Image (cartoon, helix red, strand yellow):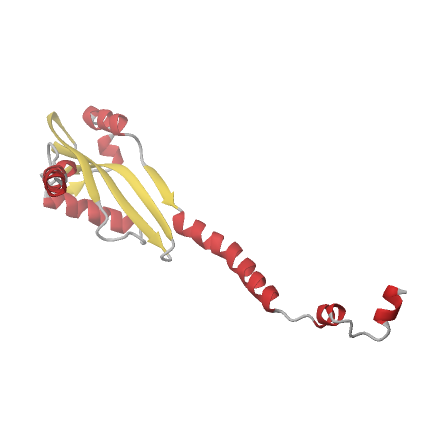
Length: 178
């Protein structure tokens, strides 16, 4: 019985593990390279290999705008790392011209209504700092001195306590009981 349940669960895991990878449209390799060049040029601390392009959409324009006939839009998510401690996740919308193999500037995208509606639909640029490592370091900064003090105080030998417990002071026993 256990083996059959484990086998059924394994089949479900195998079938549904790829559900997040399927999308309606994927970006081309040229678009990915162009966005990666832009991101690495804008951010010196870009963590290579973390770029993902989501919600890719291609729009064919009826009227060319600044010699642009086709626009591919995507939401680019990538991470930056500073000093191996400060991790930041960035999210921004990018517009790409596949005919000229370049990322479109803001002045060009402002003229295209489809890009405006896409940016409105998927949100503006945002970033989120992942501060879990910083919080762990701060916790350790508070915890370690407390642990050292606790261990050190337990092993500390007090001569005064020993002498008082064993009545080794001169005339202490006589004054206390008289």
